[in-house]
Length: 258
Length: 303
Ligand SMILES: Nc1ncnc2c1ncn2[C@@H]1O[C@H](COP(=O)(O)OP(=O)(O)O)[C@@H](O)[C@H]1O
Ligand SMILES: [Mg+2]
Image (cartoon, rainbow over all chains, first blue to last red; front, side, top):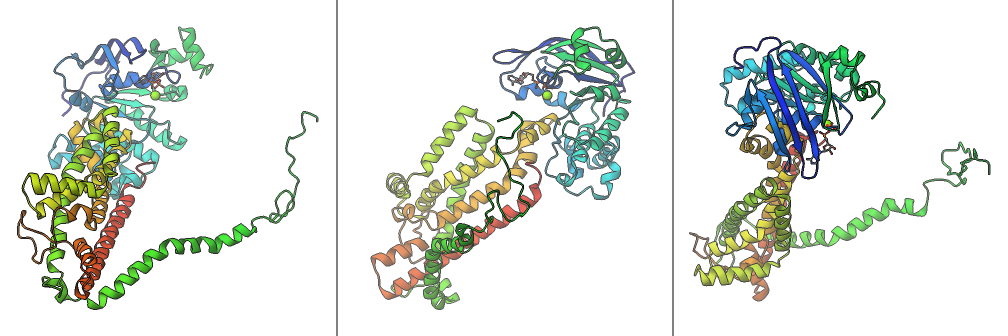
């Protein structure tokens, strides 16, 4: 379903000079960054700097907000996702998204995980296998296998968030976009989501928005620091944390603003 | 006053039944009287309704029988078959009309119109819902009975009553879809759902119980409504046989008894009133059941 695997280091998503404008101001200003296969990039920055806006431009979720204008190019495996004729629905099936709050649907655990497959009318026998695999990859399988038909709304917040990850994974996307996925969770649930993400970065591209530098330090390969809609600096996690090139980055990682 | 001194001093009284001035707490006259005053006020409010139900029941129930329900009225000796069938036919057709307009209108308003257009539609619907039913009856008479030449008929009564019921269905539908949390839509779209897939697979199962509740409430309100019927159909001793046949209705029996209070007709009026009460209570019970079941299913969604 996902085609030949992309090799390590091969660019999957290339962002070229992307700006986003609302009716009255510039929210993102000339962002360029590449995302390689098998990597976890943490996008950090103070609240209101544009992290959510940025991650939503990557799979055209910005289109749900009237009045936002996106300029520049975002390539998925070389194809501009904003080119005429590209179907945003297909883009979102290749680049899944997980939100700040768990967003399970009022259905069974199984049907939640199967949602992305149902809407493409996947054959029944494929659905079963893909749901099992997705729940395993999301690190939720052991906890829910006994009651797959139970309501997803009965799960804890942390389980719901991992179910949302499973729902995104079930269609075998190449890219998973996560917008502060642990900000509504307690430390134990956060830890489980983090270990899930560490395993996932072995096969897919992860872009993780977080305002938590500690989380970025724990699980990311690379940190991109956004400030006032600009990409200030991007580099290997250790480099950014130990030897930031920019003064603003240093101030942020040492907790001197926000 | 030294700066460290607190502005309000709280005496250390460890007797937990006393407030800070030493008075016993929670034993005021008002507190004590609330225990029996509230139930009393409740009784005063509900008393007239209960006595009405009682008064109708004692006059209707002893005279009701299967025979009465299954024979047509003839002269003063009343069977209820014709008006009962007339009422059922009218309410079902009227519901179809109200759902067709109210559901589609509410859906479009909640899901497709811009915020400003939706607000305009909502305000108009509220004004419309406040229109006195007799004015709709007048509209039904001039537009349907006279202008379209339908005559006093099942169709004229149903369409008029359906228009009366539309705003209730509209409001329930609009509210049901508009109150689905935004993050649920985002999650569906973020999972690669097309808008119509979000609507059919996610939004409608969430909204449906509330829509259904609105439909049943509209039916409960509509089934006893008399004003839209008095100008669009007549009392009639046979059940309706087609859209343009005449059709009686239970509320018209009651109305007729007022104009022509012969003993047999008055009895039929009480029987009709009782049947209407049963139907209204039944519809409200359905509403409760739907609401409770869906609340259980959707528990936690709006957290
Ligand atoms: N639809 C919008 N219209 C106008 N301004 C917006 C819109 N969405 C977000 N913003 C503004 O853009 C800035 C960046 O928002 P966001 O991307 O949510 O930041 P972050 O996720 O880093 O906290 C904020 O100042 C926010 O108020
Ligand atoms: Mg944000």
